[in-house]
Amino acid sequence: MTKPLASLIFSFLLLAGAAARDEAIATHESARHHLSAAQDLETETVLSTLRARAGSDDELQKTLSEEWTTLRKLGLVLAEPHLLLKGKDESGKTIFVEVFTWRDHDAPDHAPAEVRAIWKHLESLCEARLGHRGIEFPAFEIVASGS
Picture 1 (cartoon, helix red, strand yellow):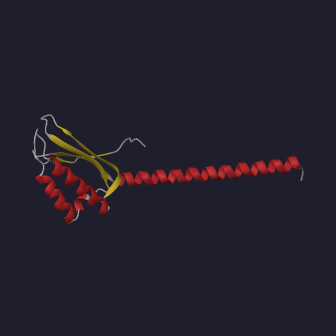
Picture 2 (picture 1 turned 90 degrees about the vertical axis):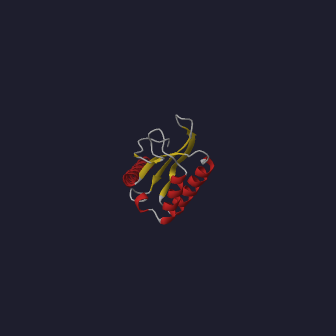
Picture 3 (picture 1 turned 180 degrees about the vertical axis):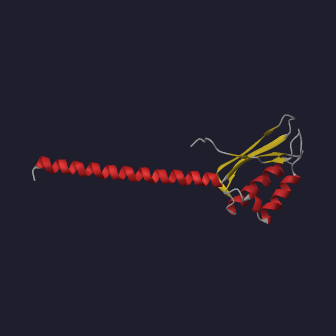
């Protein structure tokens, strides 16, 4: 075999190998995207708003931290996204807003007694005001994120 022919065959094999590698990567990425999309269909992202009773700010924040630790320990929520915010509502009173994602739609409906006890305590630390319940937690769909 001549040197130019061997070089041509070698180049062809390299290109064929690169094409196979690129196709395998694309297939892997596609499968990962479909898996991610399937997981998104099963999860439930909520934005909880908690209106603190006067004087309960510190206890409410502590209890929210305990709730998060418990939910993670029990595998009921995803690690990300998780965001806890503290601010004031239109009346100047403290509110907390928490964003997180349940592992699936059924998780909050079948929460164990340990979690339900924490929720009961959270309710005692909140009050209805400005036409809203003390705790509200509508579900949302994530349409974009920073990553």
